[in-house]
Length: 228
Length: 374
Ligand code: SF4
Image (cartoon, rainbow over all chains, first blue to last red; front, top):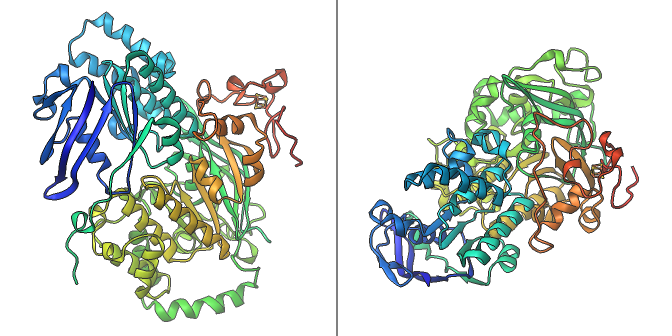
């Protein structure tokens, strides 16, 4: 059981940021991923999360090769992989209450109503969001509280793999520790496979079972042509 | 050495329709030339509001009280001679009229459009002692940042006496100019050689080749370095860095922190606003820990990291991955509903009945972990 990127190359509008990168996250393990700015860590996360089509190579989930991205992937496959991003504000619809943010992915797959409310309450409890926080909208909570909601949302479908892209970089030490402890508890229960992208060596050595480094891309791959 | 910045009784409130947000309460802080003071705390504790208050960048619904005196960088020289020394320097390199100058500087260093929208509630001020009728400009060239008004801030404080490294440079940078033009304009506007652009860029960790790009072509980290270069270009005696390392990877975080340190060692003062305790530990001389709008512990960095005195500081340090990696229980109180006593009481393992009254002092706690002399 694993989520695998096999010899993935990817980029944006002809600019290569990943060149034949392979990575495996097995169920139950926490893999740390680090690399310099522009080394394509976030692109690798997007490829693994089925949000970005690689130019070459592919992603396979528990031994099955995945074709396509986003809505072309069956829901049952998509919901097995969840992502937690760096900026909870950028990732949250400002019009929704925290409770609705958490419930949204559950509603998207048409679960029975009562089931959703109970699951939201359970998730909120898990990440330490109190009832009064759940009725607030993003502008009325701190970044740390909003990231807790995003974590609850990411766990809503009981994913098999969770990809954290610098998910605690902007958080204070306490919220960072909380996010890590919630994810670790979930992992013990469900065998979640976790990818932690971070540039903080202290965090990676504490949290990850093993750490993988993405090689920096060649300068010619990342910058526009320079006048000589 | 004499203080460069003296903040006394700073309070910032925001009136909302149905509530008042107490973002900063009774805050006293001083910063000396050559000192790097880190203000640390979790998001929403009020630390960024502090930075914005000092620069006059708060939104219109902010009510500001207290004083923030910014003293002249060099030992108080009598007013006229200071003028003699600086005026020719500016006028010789700046043929443009003052208004034009201020305009271009504003555009180039990216002060947000919010700045002109702010209206000060003059009833909230206590301008006594800041120079009668001087618009907040006191004797010896000291200026009360909270009372001097937008004109003075725009013309002679922001960029010139206080440099800001903003939190989200991507939104603060003017998009229609390349990095090189932004830097050259800023240097020119402050009487420095625009040819220094490449050197300033390198100092900030930016490849001079990247200066040919427009801000929207830069990654978050590059935009952050460009904003840093812009703040350094004017060589201000006080630098305010508001989360200057967000979006940077480790080598660049360290580079930026070391850069701030070197500025201090060269005599500038730096106010570093950050949620990153490791960053503060690396470079700060003094640390002020902020919790629920108040400073709860303000001590030399080495002492604070070795033996924290406030229970909140200790809990925050214990949450670090190289310590216990344990989160604090619960949540900070809402800034709209702060308790009358100690704001940390609901989460504090040492709480007692005494804590229902508000503690004060360099360690705002009735039962500190170590005794700290006032
Ligand atoms: S004053 Fe009391 S509640 Fe507040 S931090 Fe100190 S011991 Fe804890």
